[in-house]
Length: 366
Image 1 (tube, rainbow, N blue to C red):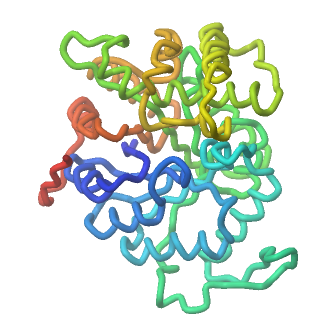
Image 2: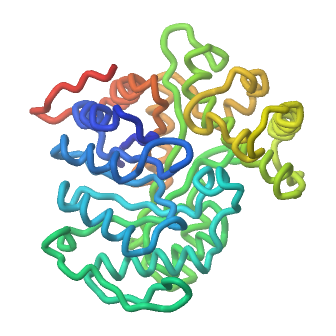
């Protein structure tokens, strides 16, 4: 099983990628959230230009704001900078769309975009919608990009509709640990079922996982300040999602959600309702999303929610969890890294006994 890291794009993108390569990670991904952090392709390009071995990827690319030609051009350009080292994971959009007050992309539109990009990366002419009309387009001059080395394509698939789409397209699956799962034994079973029902060979299914994790140092526990600063942003991202569903989309919280999440969402909604500052309400909901734990929301992050939304454990416990995920079928696990806590990569690398390359350039992150 391979191990990677991902983060939002910051001015440190190149240094983080260099350090990840130096530590022995297999992949360095960047998020695609234009209203939250830096540009995906700038981050990937900067990382590709200063590394030699590590794969550079998108975790995840949200296609709604781009024509498929723009998406394909971007990734094939990075593929020219880092031949054969590019990962492309697509997603329908969480913060990338909700920061505009929008719901995730419709499956139909998402599937059309992904299918078009796949065709373009094969050098084919495809039909795409432009200003209300279908147009035949292709990447006309392949020597300006790289269409020769394959790009690994996955789709983020937590729900049944997306799992069915993965099976339909025949691409890889990207998932995240369930807040409800008691163990990892059935993490990918639903995906395998959809794959089998589509008549696809089991050996052709490639399973990736992304997760938030903190390796404990010394006498730290889940309530320690550093642990909450690293794991808290991703744990609170779930609260942001459901608060958005209730406040802005008028939906009810599913009864099946953990009581700790119900409690946190109720408290967060009250916090947002008490905020009288001017500005779009959906922007207030997602401030700090995936980047940092806000001071006004820190009290909402209860212990149970933290433990469900983030793996927190000793090096031995992390190794045990990775063995469990590998046994369940995971081929790649990608850990989220928070800006300002990039040294968490060192904890992962040491705990998992990653083997650094024989030669590398030292990248100090400040």
